[in-house]
Structures are given as structure tokens and as C-alpha cells.
Image (tube, rainbow over all chains, first blue to last red; front, side, top):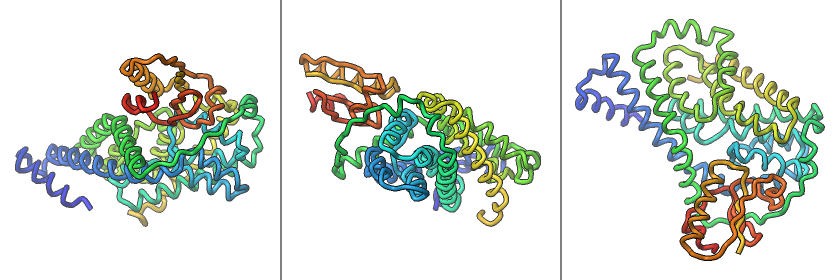
Length: 322
Length: 75
């Protein structure tokens, strides 16, 4: 898909900068420009397309859909709606209260809350840019499954008492769901592109820069030995490292790309990414306003274990998908 | 006329407030601007995404930072 860009950047490096592609510097510079342009193109297209679809699913409508379904079907639907409902961590509290107040079961609410941050358009676009569509699609599918399973387990623990009492006493008003014209949807989508790219570009550039250095200089044998698919602790360490980082750490994906080229397990990289997006410290501090520490602990434990399992699974089957 | 900005203090909420103040100043009309940060009050409006703009107790926009000229339409 991007062979033309690859060639173009080779020309840039060799003819304009006058650096040979066979040198470390040439290979790093090429990686930097090639990756930057590729990711910006894909980010723009993906965020626009997904945001356009998202404009049809405001949280108010998602809530109405989830009110009507029960049992495992609710978890599946909750997790799927987590993909398309616009979500940012500043909205997680109102969404949580809105769902609970509407009688959506706790497990279904968590299915939504787990999938929503994991499967986001920025992560999808960057995965697509770095690893191709197969990995990007598998990432989305496993994100949805983690949400479904996590929600079912949390639902089966009957932890309704671990939600702050005041949440149940909330009286929620009704708003009309605004119908948008195609022009307004396009505007919404374009605003999202600007907002997300504006938020993460600096981290991306830093990430691509470090990735470029690794690409040119890091010794593959050392990395493969310590963080390769055969080191059983690599996934665990990746997930723990991912928790204090926030979604701006999407910039770490180009680093992951460079690391994987040097022999780090793909499952390790994916688990790290999921941990960065799904288990963030700021998100937990926000959730503390509506749920008690015990339930936050359960949420982190279940989601964390699920992500670790995903990491091991990917490392085990990596040779089949790349 | 009364305008309320609903939001629990996120950066976008502050941006919206700033835009509202600017729109009101440019329009030169008498408007009371109130920032609602209490979650219970926010939820009463049925809003699930912040910031939200409420004009005369009617929710006009949810989950986005309106620009100054967009706000002027509601004044």
C-alpha cells in the first residue's frame, strides 16, 4: 500500500540528503520520514472515517440500545458499541452514571468501559501503519473479546454494592438526540481529526524518532534475547509498564514497530498498547468518584489478566499471522 | 438570557467557557453566564458528554467546544 512512499523516501534520503541507504544514518532517517508521513496519512483517513460513523452513536443512543438487552447478549452489544461510541476519559463518569441510572447491568457497563478505550481509531490507524491490516483487525477483535469476557466476569461477581450510593440516587434528565446533517457529521469528523492529531503528534514524533534510532542502531540479538517471544516475563513487564502511561503514549507504537523488527514479540507489543489505553492511572482516579476501590481493583485485575493472556496468545501464534 | 456551561473542569470545558464569554462580549448583550461543575446538576440535563452548553435551560450542544461564531447563533 505504501511502496510508492517507501521509494519516494529512499530517493529523498539518497538523492537530496546524499546519505546511502546502507548506512545506519540513512536507514534511520528513512525510517523517520517514511513512518511520519505514513502514520499522518492513515491517522487522518481513519479518524475521519470512524468519527463519521461515530456521529450516529452518541452515548445517549447507546444507552437506549443497551437498556433493552440482557445477559451475555448485553455484554456483546456493550463491547461492540464501545467501538463506535465516542469516548474520552473526561466523559467516563457521566456515561457510567447514565448507564447505571438507566438500569444497564454493571457487567454490561464494564464491557463498554473496557472496550471503549482499547479500540480507538488512533490506535487502529497507527497499528495499520506499523503492522498492516491483519494485526490491526486482530487487535480490534481481541479488544472486543476482552471487553465481553471482562464484563461477564465483573457482572457475575455481583458487586453492585461497590458502586458509590449516590450514583443510584442520581436523577437523570432526558435530552433529545440531535439529528445531524451530513455536513455536520463531516464537520464533527474533521474536528476529531484535528483534536486527536493535535493531542498526539508530538508524542508520535518523539516515538518515531526513538524508533528510528532503534531501527538504525539497536543490536537485534540483545533485544530478541530479553524481550523476544520466548521470554515469559516480557508480556508481564510490558503490561505493568503500560499502566502509568496514558493514551498519548500511542507515540510508543512506532517504537514497538522498530522493536518488533528487532525481534521483540508482537504479543508483547500489543499487550503493552492495550495496557496503555485500557488501564490508565488518570482513568482510575476518575472512576474512583463513582466506584469503590474494591471494584476498581477487580476491574484492573481482570482487564490486566485478560491483556496478559492476549499477549501470550499473540506471541504463541505470531508466526502464523506475520 | 442565561447561559450555563456544564462540565467538571476538563480543559475543553474551560475552552468553551472562554468562547462563550468572548461571544457574549462581542455581541454586547446582557447575559448571565454560569459554570455548572456539580455532577448531580449536570446529570439533570441528561448530558453524557461534557462540555455542554445550556441556553435558557435548553441543552444546545453536547460534547464539543463550540466556536465563538457558533455560540453567537444561540444568543
